[in-house]
Amino acid sequence: MPRPTALVISLSDLASDPRVDRQIDVLRETHRVIAAGLGPPSKADVDYVDLRPPPSGTLRRVLQRARGALALLVRRYHTVFWRHPANRHARALLSRCGADLVVANDVPALPLALDVAAGAPVWFDAHEYAPSEFEDRLWWRLLIRPYVRDMCARQIPRVAAMTTVSTGIAGQYERDTGMPSRVVLNAPARQHLAPTPVHDPIRLFHHGRADPGRHIERTIEAVRLLDGRFTLDLMLIEGAPGHLDELKRLAHDDPRICFRDPCPMREISRVANDFDVGVFLLPPTTLSFELALPNKLFEFVQARLAVVVGPSPEMAAVVREHGLGKVTSDFSPESLADTLGALDAQAVAEHKQAAHRAAAVLNADAAASVVRDVVAELGAMSSHAAP
Image (cartoon, one colour):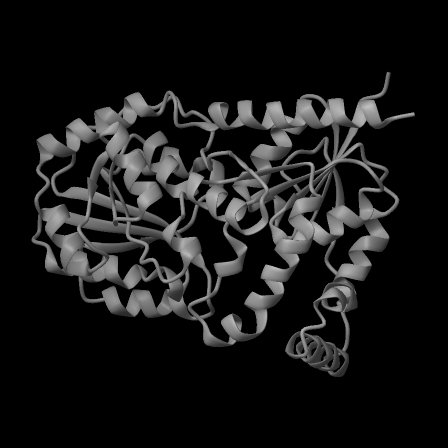
């Protein structure tokens, strides 16, 4: 009997999207997987559909954007998505897949998944809280947020199952749409590592995207306030053009601050294992940021690092529950410097041991069990619907 087919849709580079990569891993256990995205998956046995649209001329792109902006301004939201040529191109490619299960990763993939499912159940995995993703930008709040809210209100109630990354985001989506979600943590595979001895000076580590909205400059400013007992290594990928260079200029005269070349996502915890404290300060400039529970927190745990985070409720709860480290009083560089400065080698060593214990439960295995339950339930739904 042939295996059922799962179509995974994500408007991202699949090989560098850790959440989608783990999703595909679980689906491969029971399904033939077709992955559609903007870059091929990391698994050779997964069929790939390239959703990158064919190139178009500059004038055509300008006209398309103008028509899209006009439709948003007059709130003709039902036409905005399918007017975009990239979405029509993707629909033409995917309508022939004939999947038994369709997975939509994040809101931009949801209308497409519902359209090409042809009656198959759709599982919506919301990576973030989309209606607030860029709400710190005035133009986005005025033009895009009403469209995203409308899309969520119309599309989410149509899905067969929904997952997201944190209880806070799950609760917010349920208040908005009435759709309950299960939480699938953004946790990587369990790494068989041990805590390293605390270094002198204490080595701080942060990795992620160099984007102005993440305010990494506050971490740099905090380290500049500290004494020589601390160093900071930043492993960043380019986000907003030029921002990484801005951060390097900010730190250029402090030899304690080092910028490292990025490593493959599956190696992050192994590379980070030679550090002492994972640091993440994420000011709540959007509701999505306020409720964030990101990959890097769990990568710190798998690296067996002590953890220092800002008072973001979801991250702070994990840090406190497992004794992983400290939570700052606010999101200022001064608060971060005070919190870090109060650490000594013994405290860091104790928190690293707590991370070692937590690594046994805060990993992809726990998340995968939730995914397996969703897949099994949707598989039964699909079988009952079959003639």
